[in-house]
Length: 99
Image (cartoon, rainbow, N blue to C red):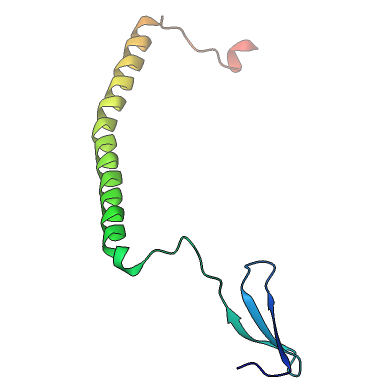
């Protein structure tokens, strides 16, 4: 029920309908616009199942990455060790030796 002192206008940001009372100089009601991407209640079970499957897939990916992490680190260590054995052993120069 709208009074004579009330008028409605669309919000420029969210496109909701704002009902403003001139006597109070305040917003008295806010009506949100109907969203097209809002899921229906009967689709809730399907949406929850999809999200659970997505979380499980992400978890399995992280488990597989963690298992392969040890292999990758040992491979990098072996490569660095092989490279260190091939380099000649030299005495490092110190600032004290340059004087």
